[in-house]
Image (tube, rainbow, N blue to C red; front, side, top):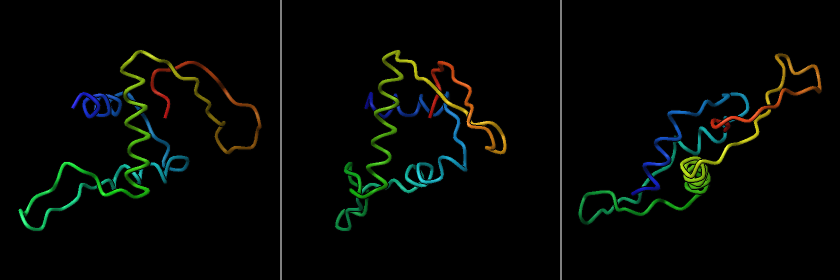
Length: 94
């Protein structure tokens, strides 16, 4: 359960670029647990596919963030015309 809480906490300090993170956002949005038809409820296990793998990657990010790690972050200038990138250390780089 601690992993889930770390993942939820990571959302509070993260921002996502729709342009640069479209696949990752889709992975997080499409994460699903298996459906137990017999009992009419979801199981505790995820449907293992690309969405669960992408969500697991973000979960690991949350765990590392919870442990106090900081991340280098690059931001391309608007328009993307320059090859220069601004870099700094931030606790919220996804």
